Structures are given as structure tokens and as C-alpha cells.
Length: 145
Image (tube, rainbow, N blue to C red):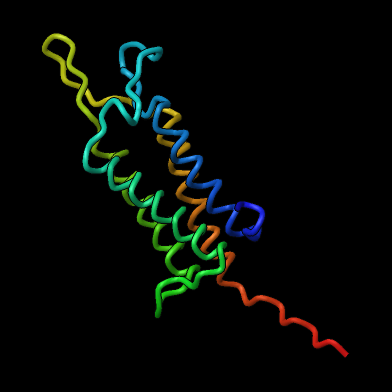
């Protein structure tokens, strides 16, 4: 099924896979001990659910168009992928600023950012980049003589 996808659609699939792979990785690090952290699944809530839903729907769109079915009218594949990538990046950006609190004794400090959340942001950027690349006009087919 992935063989039918063009290079830009495959880029979107890679972005979705990167977002999925980032969820079990540490999104936040404990300020006192850098070896401890919390994954995207560890603080799974509405925001992470929105991220997963966005990634799954982008994957479904790419697979639908790759199978030869048209995207929902009047929308176009590139626009939907661009919006999905930007929305996923906005959700991740919100989560970067709205970190869970780490409590140790009387001190409440926010967690430090981990590499998992940066990887999720890179996946969102790949989805948006795939949408931008699909926007390019495709070369016209040469007429057979």
C-alpha cells in the first residue's frame, strides 16, 4: 500500500510515525534528576489525545488519496496536511508551555523539556512540509505522439 504513495505522501507518513514514536519517549525531565522523566503517555490527557487524533487522521487522508480516492471536496490534500501539521505543532507548543508540575517537599517546579517532545514537534513539521510540497504544481504529462 505504501508503494502507491508518492514521495511527499511518504514524508507525511514518516511524520505520523515520528509523532507516534515520540509518545513513549521522555517529554519532560525532572529538574532535580535528569535521568528521571515523564513520557507523553505518562501525562496523557486531552492535548495528547488531540495530537494522536490529528496524526491518525492525516495518515488516513494520505492512505485514502494514495488508494486513488479523492480527498473530501472542496478541500485538497495539501491543504489538509498543512493544517494538520500546523495544528499538531500548535498542540505540541501548547504542551511545551503547559508542563506538569514536579513536587518535591514544598517546592513546586515545572518539569524541564525532554527530547521526546522535540521529536514530536519534528514529526508535526514533517507533516506540514509534506503539505507544502504537495502544493507545488505537478509537471504536466507529455502528450504521446
